[in-house]
Amino acid sequence: ERITDCQFCLVPKGVGFTNGRLMESFFSGCIPVILSDAMVVPFDAFLPWPAFSLKPRMPRTPREAHDLVDFLEGIPAETGLRMHQSLIEHRCWFDYGPDSREDCSPYEGVVRMLTW
Image 1 (cartoon, rainbow, N blue to C red):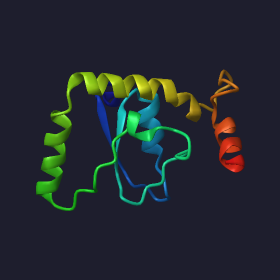
Image 2 (image 1 turned 90 degrees about the vertical axis):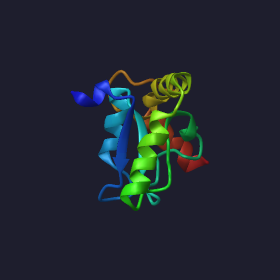
Image 3 (image 1 turned 180 degrees about the horizontal axis):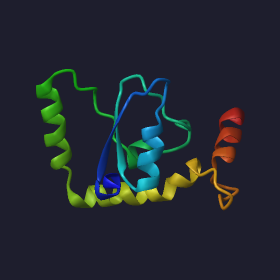
């Protein structure tokens, strides 16, 4: 419930190469801040990830974590709104629901990656 009130969501590395929190942020409308130097994002060959997410260097100290918070707080509102709109436009690539579009779905994403 709280995640829907946030503009940015921290997404640490999970057990594998990606993380359920990444998808959680997409469907809550929260711009993902990927906190892993090793996390691999889906469909990176054709999705403009920098338009709807942030991937700063992984903070290694409390000071670096504080600097990250300062950085996020300093992002202009219009930039955040632009990123949020891009997030909404691209989340169809992760929607496995029965109403997913043929031209923008995880299935189409997999086909694109296989034929890339």
